[in-house]
Length: 590
Image 1: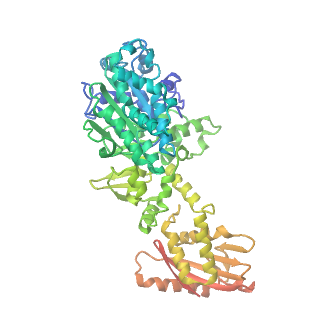
Image 2 (image 1 turned 60 degrees about the vertical axis):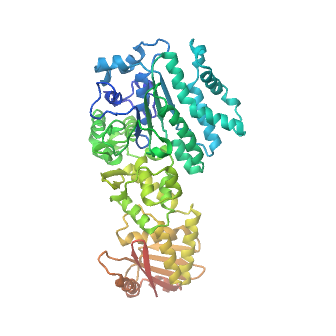
């Protein structure tokens, strides 16, 4: 098979017609039609299915595949030629009985809520209204349209003239919300009456409006609208609804938008059924790689892009793998084309920033442990809402959101907890990039704290230095292992290096006297030099040994005469021995 990347192609018809590489998932169609004789033990046993996967795992393409398999040829009802042209070379077409019964047999309503992401409720509602209006396009051209009930024709007319709505007036807002709430329900009834067949409803990125509304402060208004749509089309619409499939990242509780909906199955990242339906399995990815000149780089590629665990299925993000393969195979040197981060640029990574504002030393230490490559255990509460996470941020809730959006993956799933880790090198660099952006001189709050630390060091105010360092350590995250004292040293170096200039110089690990000091800070205006020696408290040490260790660090400065060069240059000397333990320190001054 010749590799031809489908990067960015989310329409199944376009992908097949342009002969892009497609990993065949069509066999799962039989499991979606649970009411037939075709499904397996994986089959959904309810007419409404919600599929949850991290971003860029192929949710949109999957729903597009379902749409093009099921959708009627509206101009030639009953004819399967258009669908056959797309599916005849795929696995599902081997089951002729199934295809004859289901292929090109249903009216399909397909809508993505991905772009319903504006900064205020009115703008988001308008975007949603315009997206819905496109679903009603050309309905009036059907010769049976005039025979529809008047209320349904009024719904079509409303969306045909949606641009005339004054959303900022009370009547305009009320009318828009009312018509949006019943839009998909009315459309399914219209399609049923026009084509005498039950309807398939596909809703992509169903949770995006709620996520954005939670961030921008209009969650309650938006959830009322989304609840209204889903209730009307999914709950009270059995007469016209054949099946509905929704996709998103985050599991949203029934109580919030699926109230009273008993015909619903949710297939998340920790559910065994359909666990390999969306995304590439490791074997599928391996076959793609081995069919190209990249075969010798398989282990490196997996190190960068593999590592997701969906209830026992080893999965890889299609977007990242395909982008890398496309770029590498088009390069002049396939063997040396560097793996890089494609996933980081697909969406904002602000969720990571939430951890830096928790002001919780324990949470910060757990995040540090995660970034250092270790596993972290969190409570299993998958039904927490976006609003709860963003308004009452705590480590476990934020980590649940990270798990659903792909920043971490569950390696163990127990009744009351998940054990999670960062899945691969690509995602690690997402964390690294955010850390480097937050803890630098562009962050004014960080600079302000660093300046206070510098001033306290030169003032000889030991208590203030200790308090400032402890405060900064609470939220500070390193992209290096915090398990060695050298990286506490690097923390101080990173903070104080922000102020280097004509009058302030910082040196690290330079020779002076009888050895190499950790840090030397020289203020030319004050004619003062600060010498710092850092130590990390061993894990087996007792609390009453902390002060003694700080004195040992101070004695090392004295015994090895680290201040020799500064003293000879005429500087006053201030010496600090600093012992670090976890997210805190103890300081001795000399």
